[in-house]
Each structure stands twice: as structure tokens, then as C-alpha cells.
Length: 235
Image (cartoon, rainbow, N blue to C red):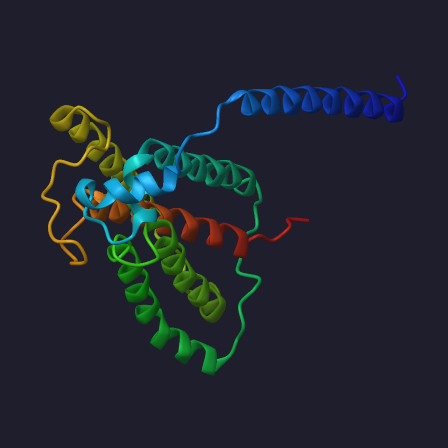
């Protein structure tokens, strides 16, 4: 069979399948009746009494649709796992993006703990201000990116530690969800005191969930950064 013809046939078949799925999805979405009121206003109305979180977006992400957040974290893990399997096939791996600059090294040593601290601040205060586990985890990973750029091959992640952090944080997330299911009959349901709105000790289980999410994201993204920064085509 002609390769060009085969590619064209595959392209046509895939295009038809995608078109059919798109039409079906649009039909399903258009069949829903519009809500009489605003869902956002209803969530805001019950947010204060339900979660005591000053950041309503956080309440939606970790409480009202917490199971969806668990799926997002799982997708991130599977993506990095697949990338790691592909990159590990390369025999030569070294840092090819580092810069031998004394000023960069000194600046990285100073900024590294500050960026880590800022990342944890974003995670812990996610229920009070814009931020949370995903954002804070990426900020922490950016600190390791800076060190990779500054330290050449002197810095390597301890994958036993990153794997342990990733596993324990993921297990902690699921454990909080199961405890909510057992104690309040709802997965990721709140079983801790709500505290006072606007205070650090508020939001029930939301800060705890974000801590687990932040640790998991930071470990996974840091590992991903190291994977990509050490790629060297083995010829």
C-alpha cells in the first residue's frame, strides 16, 4: 500500500471520528436546560457557611469539585511518568542548559530558599488569597530550575526523596477524601473545625488538601524539569 495513501486514509478516518464526537458532544450540551439562576452566586452564598474560605475559587477546586482535582493530579503524575519512561532510554544524560557564571551561582544560592519559602506561602495561604497547591508547587519547582541552571552537574535530585514525597502526598490526599467519606458521608468532606473566615486557621480540610497537592506538584514538576534539562541525544 502506498504510504501517502495510507496516511491520507488514516487522516480522513480520524477527522470523521473527531467530527462525529464533536457533533454528539454539542448535541448533549445543547440539550441541557439553562439554569434559572447563577451557579456562581449560589456557590458564593453557601461558601461562607460551608467552608469558611476567603478564596471562593479554592472552595470550588478543593471542596465542591475535589474529586475532579484528584483526577487532575493523577493526570499530571501519569504524564510525567510517561515522559520519564521515554527519556530514561537515553544513555547519556547531562545538564546542557547550565551557565558557568559566578554571579548566577551566588544569586541562585541566595534566591533558592526565598523561592521555596514563597512557594510554601502560596500553598498555605491558598484559601485566603489567590494561589494554592498547584501554583505554589510550580513556584517551588522553579527554585530547582534556577539551581539546575546555575550549578551545572553539581546538583542532582535525590529521586528516592522526590518519589517518597510524591507518594506520601498523593496518599495523604486520598486519605483525607476517605476520612471525609467515613465521617461526613462525602468524599473530601470537611471533618475539621472551620475556624474564622479570613484567618490562617480556617477553611477546614482545604489547607490540608492544598498542602498535599503542593508537595505532590512540586516533587513531580521538579523531576520533570530535571528530566528535560539533562537530555542529551546519544549519538
